Image 1 (cartoon, rainbow, N blue to C red):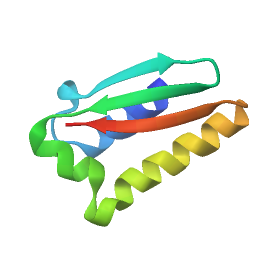
Image 2 (spheres, rainbow, N blue to C red):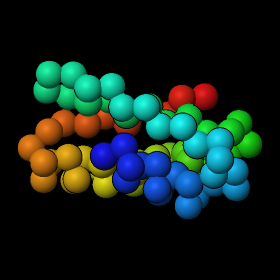
Image 3 (cartoon, rainbow, N blue to C red):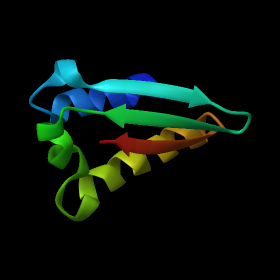
Image 4 (cartoon, rainbow, N blue to C red):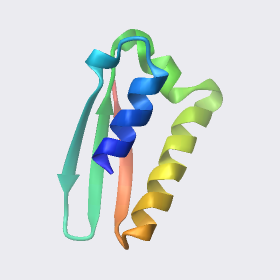
Length: 76
């Protein structure tokens, strides 16, 4: 999951070297924290949060296939 989010985020931003993805594993849920450069935050969130919602949808679909639950948090 971490690699998937990192790959998509690096494709979206202007400064891909600033993309940081941390995965925190829990018993039933894993939290994926995504942080990008301040200038690229708008590109990750998108208009009215559409890009962020799409990222979360992709993450949910991929983690459902693995029978896990994942949550995406975008860190400022």
